[in-house]
Length: 218
Length: 230
Image: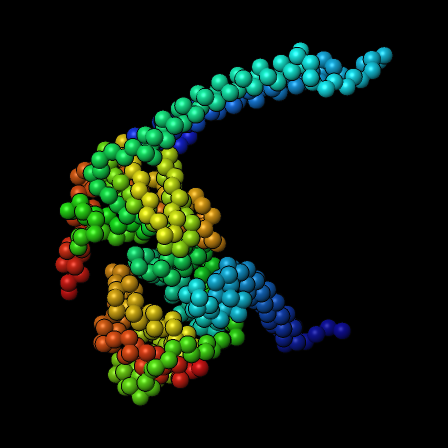
């Protein structure tokens, strides 16, 4: 039985849609498989669930936004992170990031990690004053990182902090203060962070603000 | 001969190459000779009709000399090797010439870090230059190095210098080198040190006096501080 012209059009469109769906699904599966394959190297330090391992300084990364993971991998690759003489943890990470040599590797592994179920790390620091931390956060951090500390890609890639480990944030703030992080000429986001972090007087200030951030998303 | 494959750029590289060559030639000679003798015996005493296999204990003089003569000759070769090895070991590891400068080399998972003494040629002063993955030296000058490890065993290896020295946690190991040619060459870790072992390559920049002085001036903390001023 012959089909009417509009039925022909509908059939062609339906087949085209199916073809696009199949092709798109296949590309997604391929990319996802590539990301999972690349992640095997990350899992050695960050763990199978990407929940981090404090003993070796590997932070939790599962479920972090893809844009943030990509940005940090590129920072390690181009030497803006992990090239300071005293950045022991960064120097462990940098060669790993440099193994992502093929086009699309960074994007694939970032997408894979971003799609993993987030792991809310348990607090490890004690002695933080939440009220004092809130005051610091509201003055220094909130503008870029947002009220929920969820980060902001458009503001120099402000990091999402609300799923970070407290020990990791503590260390990074110290690194910014001492210039271990954020002092490379190409690191614009780091250059913005350094003067902010220098406003924290001492370790107690850092503990306070980190303790407050831990209440936001964990 | 070896420098046709890996260029030799330290004052002691040729001594080490010659020692390797000596060992290679002597061992190679005996290897080939033994193989020839074995194959000769295999063919000479192959199975033949009407001839029974014979079990020999190797206790007769005429049998034993096939072992004892080569054994003595190999020992003579060993004496040659030991003599030259001790000489090279003494010159490279025991006898440290007066240094022009001393650099600090730190291995860690997974990077090499370096502390250069800066314009005052003294380590441990304010103008020290710290780098990661890059060691800058001047050609034709004797350098001492103080080698450390921050975590596990590493091995500081500069193939063009024929230099390889383990870095042991808790120890500061002193060595030396003098480059006799300019260029940029690889530094490797030659001791398995974890999953990133193969990913910690660094580079040595052997520079002319003018180029090196310019680099030191560029990297001087004072110069960098003024360059970072808004």
